[in-house]
Length: 502
Image (cartoon, rainbow, N blue to C red; front, side, top):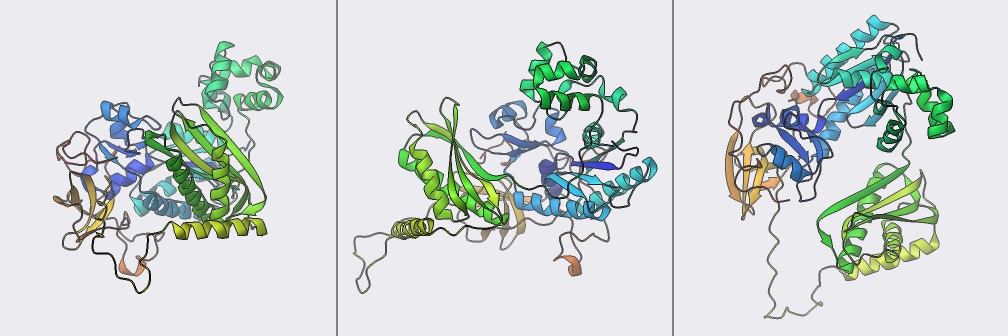
């Protein structure tokens, strides 16, 4: 514990949804829900306007649509979120060399290590300056907690939401924590919380009064002692600049249970390829391949296989995942599949057997490609060229039209796609137009930055703009909405016609 509140915790406000509102002037001040749009999709983030209707993260998307039918339901655009996160982390790096990212929108900062703050006054100044810089660079708001420990700094940022700053003076920890529920403390999840509730302990003050011996008896030596220390307000965990990844994984939930064994294996192989791309992107390899299968009855099975050495070969991971699948009964149907790699390393172990298997797999892949006509032979006259698959457009997706410029998909269906043409710095909501899904003038595009950069800085996403965008800050707490346009009539809203396909 420190004698000055020099540990800062930043948590961006409704990050995914706020970024979508900043990027789409027509959605500012309106309910926005980001997540999977399929039948079994879940909410990733809901804007504060949607939260007033009871929508929250991890809620089934179908339930969110019932609670807030007129919200805009959008697919996540992680390339945009990562770009904005890079800008925010760059600003945090100016405060201190000790920045501990927890996710794209959350991080701890040791202000003392950067010489940025040494007491409550300088810490508050640093926190307020950070919030101003983030708003100027991204048009998004973040909440800041300042305290003498990581636990209390995180509690402070939660109390500061949305768009605020809370500083917890050292020495006031017990008074602050006392009336809070036990789930406030790190390490107290639903199961532990229920166990403590049955024992008559529902607040942090009751945990402190119970004493360490009693908590050790209930929770075990290590867990009980740690929970008691936190209940007393003690947390000496340091801010760690780099957190080593323990595993890399991907998973998909399917709208309809999969029963076909060949289809299930194909999905596992596809997930294995995605997992390897993410593994290579992080600069790692791994020894242990993990398969996750959630069956029709919600029972979840995990199977793993440890290789002789770490690998980042997609063929090796595919084959290991396929072998693990053979040991799983999928007769009743599968609703979720996942593939992961753990036991990470920053090198790859050469393996002749794995290489041989990979070569065979690549040969098999070549055989499964599109059939080619033998050299020197003419195609048979009765053969017909298969019709191209209909292009799919997802609500919220970035597009560009040859004539109308940049826009985003509001919805699609029945062979048509509806697009609103506007940019993050547009003063007014853009015009809406509808096209055939295969219109050659309409193409997917990369997200635009949230703040227009001067020409000489456009190539540097983390550079700070010289002036605020004419569109002003994103609508939200403390900001007026940019448009009073009525909700619900457009294609991209859940209540409108032509709802986007999952």
